[in-house]
Image (cartoon, rainbow, N blue to C red):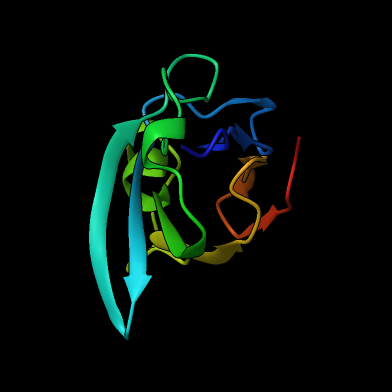
Length: 119
């Protein structure tokens, strides 16, 4: 069994706070299709309460994380444009080492975002 796992952390860089209440969906990408694996919401620290992909389900392959930024920004009271510049942010990435911790954070503002492989 693989020992690796997947986590995230979302920070609202415009407010300088963790992005609490942001919906995150994980998909496996297989032959051009997406298969939903997990659906979670960030806690008060901007993290999920458990790994998005725990060790028991962790496997090499291609994945996509969807961050539902538009709904979060609406709930946070950020004045909306119509339509919002950022709504659902898809991040596609690969897992090549089944023994590693993959951490995919998102730094978010209403008009931009960045990500990286964290630790």
